[in-house]
Image (tube, rainbow, N blue to C red; front, side):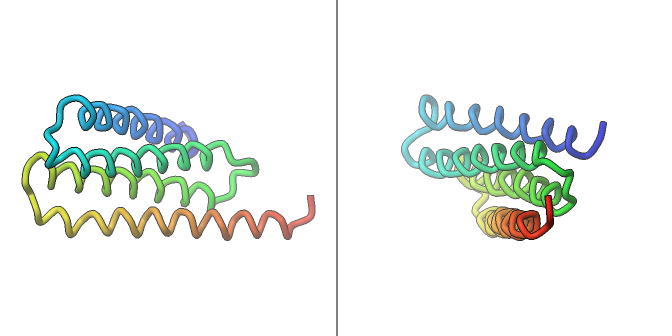
Length: 123
């Protein structure tokens, strides 16, 4: 499998996990953990979709593929950290969530750069 197929597969698994966490937050979680799970699942889903967009981005730009991986890994790290705080009371994992957030921000910035760069090159 090539890098973009691996990215698409990883993004799809992230999307499935985000739905699972969201469903648990809506139907099985107590009120004290619902907000953390909902927030984590939401960010994970948005960034799974971003990773899929990057996987099918025309031109196979290396910056876009990197943005996709940062997006998918960042969303997963962020969501799992919030889930660990919510479900396992591992409050130390709250310090890990910002790492996922930084990865997600970096993904968006790389995609921004790649989009500007692709506009400046002749078609």
